[in-house]
Length: 509
Image 1 (spheres, rainbow, N blue to C red):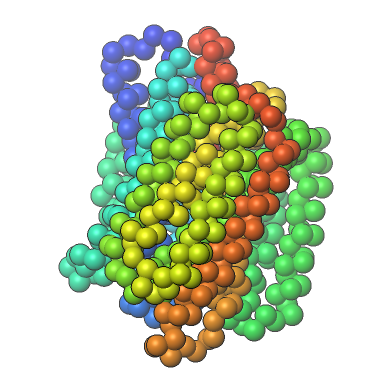
Image 2: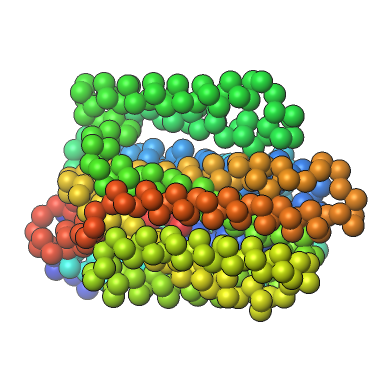
């Protein structure tokens, strides 16, 4: 059955049970995607040892997923609007499960990279439908409770992903080494596919839309031209064609802007809603999200390599070391939204940038002071400071960015915010070859590996600290008193209207 986005006012008991089953299914899918991102980082050194992967291939195992995810998010949301959210969700979760199997049984690094790219593309089909299905299934007055549950899922995924990855890697189930971190998705995905067909109700956008194929091609081409040479450049000796490709990417993005402007005038269905960039706070927020994604992309991969390769720690020890960071993020995020932002507004986000930058500098100091003999407990303080700063940013940032966006464009704006964050993450992962691997020789003697990775970690963190300073300055363009998230405003508008926009906000880890 196909329905529009009109909320349910007084659902029958049977329908009430069905929608809560549907919620559990889509939340499980969102959790699976989030954990898959965090679980892989902790297993990267094991993958490198087992498969003999090069530094470039290590980067592409993570960057390939992020790039495919970023390039496909807006397209995935649009496909759900056109062909039905349930249909595209099931296609995405089925493809994600298949790609997970291919990752788990990859015979070489090249196959693993290709499978990760496919996995990211399928996640881009699956994840954008999650909140769209919630909008079509739950009345406005219940969505606050539902979004609260999503927040809990995000927090749980942030904490459990690294620990689960460490345990699965350490246990070496059936002699499979790192492979269970992907194979664990199979039973979850199959169950989600079967139950989703039964319990999720179909929904589409209230008006007919068209997929902007030229826009999709230009976005994908531009990202590839920028990120591929950035990731492979060091390994290939920084050839001339790499610089030409990166410069040409900006020409492709300029062509995208010109085409999307014309597309909006012709039929009103561009892939990117360019009018949003006329809103000062939104344009600044897009810049903040992109740069913040760069910082996170650099830090998390380098941090994992530092602990497991540079310090020689086990995956389990590295995973447990990150628990204070995850707890601090969750605690600060809840505090910022409920207590601090209503009183202090934009200052909370800027304080978060400074606090996170301070934590990075503290981490650099401790790493230099203790060297390779640093202990997990000595990392706890800088990690808690960094996590608190990150929590003050991630939770209220979307509200700040959307506070001046017209309500009719809220869904498109949310999709763009999450897309550029993933693009920034992919860019940060590409920059790892410059700010981390660029500090060390291609051929290291066994005794030189640890010191080289420790030194590379410190060098990379200097860049992360500089990025946090840039984010602090960019935040001056955000509104001083961010309004509540558009979704929250919609909830107070009553339960008789349509559920919002033609493209719903996207949940992204």
